[in-house]
Amino acid sequence: MQKYYQPEIECASQEQIKAWQDERLVETVRRVYENVPYYRAKMEAKGVTPDDIKSTADLHKLPFLTKDDLRDAYPYGLMAKPVKDCVRIQSTSGTTGRRVVAFYTQHDIDLWEDCCARAIMAVGGTEEDVVQVSYGYGLFTGGPGLNGGSHKVGCLTLPMSSGNTDRQLQFMCDLGTTILCCTPSYAAYLAESIHEKGLRDQIKLKAGIFGAEAWTPEMRRDIEEKLGIKAYDIYGLTEISGPGVSFECSEQAGMHINEDHFIAEIIDPKTGEVLPEGEKGELVFTSITKEAFPLIRYRTKDICVLTRKPCSCGRTHVKMSKPMGRSDDMMIIKGVNVFPSQVEAVLMKQGYPANYQILVSRENNSDKMEVHVEMTPEMFSDNLSHVSAREKELESALKAMLGIYADVKLVAPKSIARSEGKAVRVVDTRNLY
Image (cartoon, rainbow, N blue to C red; front, side, top):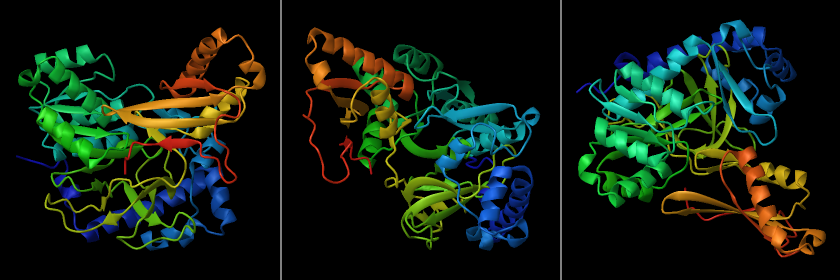
């Protein structure tokens, strides 16, 4: 069985991979310098020009980009191609009203879909398979990415999107789905539903590609046992392209980064110093084939380790570990990026004090978010029958900001413990890393 989508790339020699990266980095830096005034100004501030970049050995000379840069340059400030050459945007949530928007030419989409096709074939996918894509579609990258990758492989593709579990199960049984693509928490929920409805003997699943949120080895084993499949991890960021930046192979021990498209570094999150292979630190990516939105030295805030230890699958591209945490305060809840500052912005706008606590848990393999909010003395003295209505109003406002449901509990003034240091805004008991 063929297990590579592009074997000449996925199994290329280290010398060939470095040659691709050197050539593409030099070309990308020059193109960005000439076409993106925002980034040119950052380079000039650091005293570096394209002539200083002759290979990947010079990458450390370039300035970092962060999510703040993406917000400051919103919407078109980091584009390296004119709008007329772009055919799509994808977006992720931001901490304020400004979202992070990424642009794509048709060529960018083709390369992204190639990366996702590699991920599908790495789990044993062929043109004989039926792939059920139950990630969200629309602005979220999960659905479109795996959908395109499935087409590239030649699989029968079910663009289910998320939700409507009864329909998911009906199509899974009727059409003989063999590969499931969704968040791990939704996979766990589907597994429970399959057992509750007695459908275990009717499903033909052999593999799952699960990403967009953190999940433990214990959760992987539980999903594999309940569905009778192999469960594989996939990693991506909207800013870089989406799912398929890296993916697990048959070893199920780390994700191969598509190094012909992305250069990965590990840095000390405090100093920005590049760390040697095997050291734990913050993951940084440089896009070297993207036309519309190439990001150079983009800080992901994900903490992980890189390794070039030979892999039994035959792929030669560097592996990244599962993220072991984050260097910022972002949480991933039900596959959605959530910042405490987003919650705080909603509370302040609704007239509540900035005294709140976010409780995140995982029940039956599904994330649950609860927000405890102090009322003002004036609110507390209101007719208590209004409290429930206030809670529902806040829940709606948070859903509009975050895109996910949060259970709101209004509590008495000064009932949330105060801290003399940094306030403990988040209590996350999911044990994800």
